[in-house]
Amino acid sequence: MRRNDHRAHGHPSWWAFWLHRVSGLLLALFLPLHFLALGRALTAPAALEGFLRFSDAPVVKVAEWGLVTLLALHLAGGVRLLLIEFGRASDLRKNWIAGGIGVAAAVGLAFALALFA
Amino acid sequence: MLVAAMNDKTLHVRIWRGLGADDDGRFVDYAVPRQDSQTVLDVVTHVQRVLDATLSYRFACRVGMCGSCAMTVNGQARWTCRTHVAKVVGADGVLEIAPLAHLPVVKDLATDMSAFFDKWARARGRFQGTLTRHDDFARVSPETPERQAANAGIECIGCAVCYGSCDVVQWRLDFLGPAALNRAWTLVNDVRDTDRTARLRAVAGDAGCHSCHTQGSCTERCPKAIAPTIAIAGLKRTVARAAVKGEL
Amino acid sequence: MSAVVGAASRGAEAAPEMALRNAVAQARRWYWQRISAMVLAVCVVLHLAGMVWAVRGGLSAAEILSRTQGNALFAAFYAVFVLACAVHVPIGLIAITSEWWRWPPAAATWFARGVTAALVVLGLRAVWAVYAPGA
Image 1 (tube, rainbow over the protein chains, first blue to last red):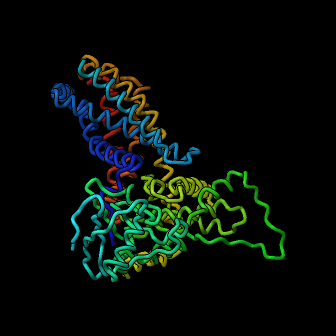
Image 2 (image 1 turned 45 degrees about the vertical axis):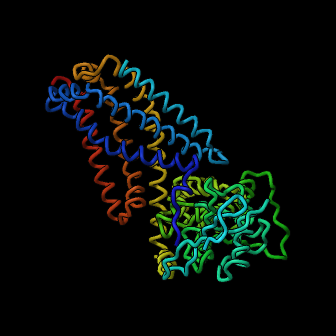
Image 3 (image 1 turned 90 degrees about the horizontal axis):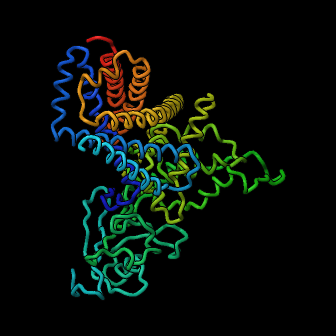
C-alpha cells in the first residue's frame, strides 16, 4: 500500500506535532545527564564546580540555550494540546501555534541575553 | 511515451500503475492536453478514454458528493473531481496521481476499502436505539452542546481522505482512524443512542482515541471541513471520565 | 492484502476482558500524562524564570548551593518537579518507541518503567544533593 511522504506533512499542525515530539525526546535524553551533574554535588562538590567551569565554554552555553528553547517550545506546544483536549476548541488552533513559537522565542531570547550579555 | 513536447498546453502526468500487493507497481508518464477549469478527475478520465484503456480508477458523482474519487495528488489526499489542476500542478508542470495511502491497492488507482469500513464497524459506528415506529418521535434540540458536537461530524461520507492522511494509521496497523472515531463521537453525543458503554470501550486503547497525537492532517485535508481531531479529543475526555467513574 | 486485514481483525477477536483492561489502562495513561503536564507547565514556567535570572553573570557551584542548601521550599518544589517528570516522560517515550521505532508493547512498557525508576532515583538524589546542608 502507498505511504505518505513529506508532501503530506507540510502543514502547521503537523509541524507542531513533530516539534513537540522531537523536543520531548531530546529533553528526555538530556534529563538524566542534568540530574547526574547536579547529583555530583553530593559526592564531590568540587566536581560540580569543575562541571560548571566546563559549562562556561561557549559551545556549552549554546547547547544550554538550545535546551531552554526546546523546553519552552515543548511547553508551548503542550499548552496548545491541553487547550484542544480539555477546552472548547473547534479547530486546530493554528494561531496558538504561532503564539506558542513566539513565546518560546521570547524565552530563548531572554535566556540568551542573560547568558551572553 | 511522451509524444508531445511538454509546454503550457500539455500536462506531464505521472499515474501509478500496478496490480496491488504482488506487483511492484510504478509511475507511468502521460501527456494530457491542458484545458481551463480542468479537474484532476478530468485528467484521469482523459487518460483512460483516449490514451490507455487499461487504467483502473473509481468515480461516481463527479460533483463532490460521494467521495469515490479520492486519490493522492502530488502527495496529498484529495477528491479529484473537486481539485482543479491549476491549483495543484507543480511548478515543474508535473501532476502526480497515486492511489490513497494506507489502503491495499487493488489495481492502479483503486484501493480496497474493506479495512477502512471494518474499522468503522469496530468503533461501533452504528446507531443503536430502543424506540420503535409505535413510539413518538424523539425530541432532540439542535441547540444542545451534544447535538452541536454531533452535527459537526455527521456529514462524513466515508471517503477515506482523512485515513489516507494520518501518520498514526501508517504506524499502527489496527488504529481505527479518524473517520471511524469521528463517527463514534457523533453517536456518543446522540442522546437517543443506547450503546454508549460498549462504544466507549471500543474507541479507547492503543487502537483507539488514545493513539491520536493531534497531528491534524485529517482535519487539514477533510473535504467536508470536519475536524476529526476535535472529535477524538472529545472521545479522550469522555473515556477518561467514564474510566474514573468506573463506567467503562 | 489479506495479511493487513487479518492483522486488523485479529485485534477485534482479542478477549473482551483484555480489551477492557487495555482501554482502562490507556485512559489512565492518558490522564496521568495530562495531569503531570499541567503540573509541569507550572514548574517549567517557574524554572525557566529562575534560570533566566540565575545565569546572569555566570554560574558557580557555590552560588547554586548557597541558594539551595537548607532551602526546604526549594527542595519541595523540585521534588514535585522530578516526580511530575517521572510520570510524564516515560508515557511520551512509550508512544515514540512503539510508533517510530516499532518496539513491541512489552518492550516499550518495560523500557518506560526503567526510565521512571531512573528519573525518580537520579532526580531525587539530585534534589537531595543540592539541598543537604554542608558538603
